[in-house]
Image (cartoon, rainbow, N blue to C red; front, side, top):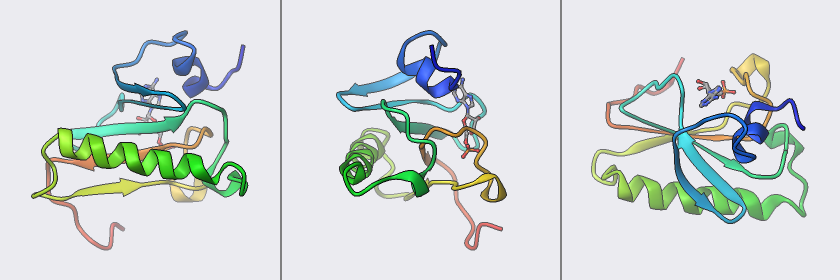
Length: 114
Ligand code: AMP
């Protein structure tokens, strides 16, 4: 069994608040939310980081974006706006090395993020 916590969520070995299980991708609530809406969208197959995505795997990123669109609409974020974030590498704040897209909304966001 993988040591990766997100692989373990996919395998239902670690509990998570799953909001969408959609074929190759999964969305669940972040354990430590940084906004009223804070979801994590992941591919079910293990890819450590966005910088590891191969040309063959690139369609999964499109699936993550498509799911993010749908979930943002469901959460009523289209008027207020929302933020999508992928941290790549520990220097950029990546702490879980399984590719994930943060979907954040429900509060204002500053730019640049700092
Ligand atoms: P990052 O810092 O971009 O790697 O984001 C990792 C995110 O995963 C953080 O926002 C954590 O709060 C979140 N996280 C870590 N473990 C879990 C878990 N078991 N369930 C839900 N979210 C988690």
